[in-house]
Image (tube, rainbow, N blue to C red):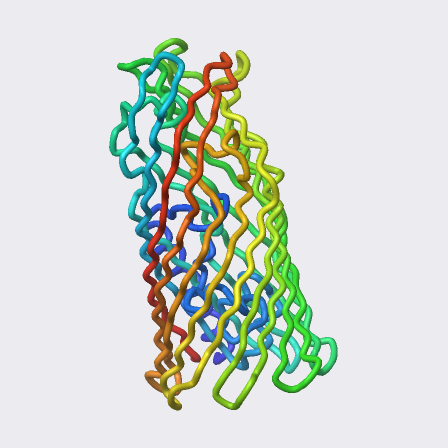
Length: 411
């Protein structure tokens, strides 16, 4: 009976995360359109140490991290995303100039994790997350850049069952399966009075893997991998010229490799670090296909992305832990011709703070705040299909504020 109760509790924790994910459309708040905010704890350290454990949310980056927690544990995080982005079109093919106003849409995202130790060296886990997301819409929907994109949304919900096994003292390996559902929406203005629109959904499958190594007491090194996936969104495309047609849009998502360090410096202080590589060079364009040929398309041709962060934790008391971190992110967009109006990304600097309060032996409460400074950049874009129209030139400025709360429970 106790094991059946533990399993039901684990499934309930995952189900709560799935419900929370339906409450708001996530928005891209990292390079490309992946979502770093999978754990309030690690948001407080700017994701430093994220694959090396210390919190159950580490299993998002490294499934082997579940082996640090005995018994049945769960963690949930809820993040408010307040983005700002403005696109100023200074040149267009006979469509004038103008600004988008804020293209950011305030949104929420969440994640839930559960893990149970079934044997001295064996752990099973479940993560319900939203790894990728995007939601943008210009305040001024009639500005010239709307011919490249108006409203753009991508929602993903990912179930990730995992297993971790301690193969030797200080060495644990883990693996998991990704089951991901995606829903996308794309809009392009085709005339001053008409907007073409695509909407579609798809399932995709992938894997996760990882290892944690403790070479000496107080040192933990974690290496995690999340596999690439491709969503072939199937739905319909409607425009004034063609009516409604069946259509598809391929969204190529990257492999992600995360290397992290967690180092105990004193009994109350820990140093954290992370380096992460994202294979965004898979993302070639934002395009549609119909039975009669290609639909609207904008080339991307992104590079790979890199993320580096350092941070620390300090136990102010037996109940209160403080943390902070700073990160620098190299965007997969390094040229004005790759910066889409839907995703006006550039290199970023993260400044983060956070805290945890041990409410009881079973419950710990977490809070975090991050501000993301996004480097200003330019755009120089053409519509690639059905006709090569352009250039649309201009400038982009953007930033993001993140507020997160979470709870960790030992059942």
